[in-house]
Image 1 (cartoon, rainbow, N blue to C red):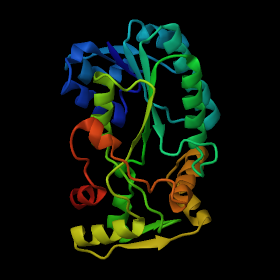
Image 2: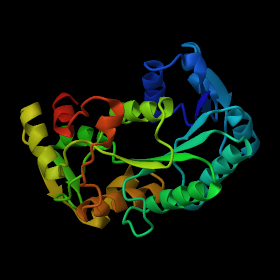
Image 3: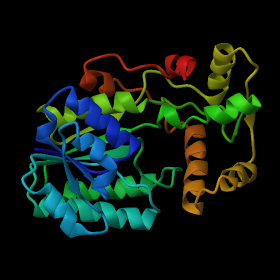
Length: 281
């Protein structure tokens, strides 16, 4: 049995779809804080379970009898998420799962300029200390998080660090690689860097969008203060505003520019370049 936490999120749903291409849905349990939100996936034949990172007993119950558990990282502030991830890892150990797979981030180091990297560094270390067989998936930034709507409306990609390159990868490609890790052998003790096959800067992205849309699009360097003000105006919580600013600084420092073939080798097919994705986004 494969158990996937966070199944109601965009990545979780993409992974469920990729798993359905490899195994019978009846061999997969999709876990969510609110199973009602994944009723459509239950209708497709997946098992579903309640699993709340703040209620360890629900995690232990959901993980019971699992050969492999995928812990999709949460989306709260650092201290809370570290506590939640540790609870999930403890539950996996208590349930004696066969292997734990964890969605981390590229350059999961406390020294990273991306504040959330410290969460993933702690979770990776905690998993390794747990004694459980493990696989760590270090995901690069999602292509879908590029601010295309604003760029189309204003003709500008305004952010700090516009020269910094990132090897973006789509959720669909991450899901394909993840599903392979969950359903095949030989991944215990491995850490994979899951990136796209090319690294582009916002300057590159603006040029591609301009050609695809037939309108002028310009990448504009903004101050940290202006960027924070813009993000805050969207109603984002302060911890997320801080993280998004840190992600831009990390990109500027080259933390996300490395290109790996791990995703392609795992998925068994080519990974879509972000330039190709942009032309149809």
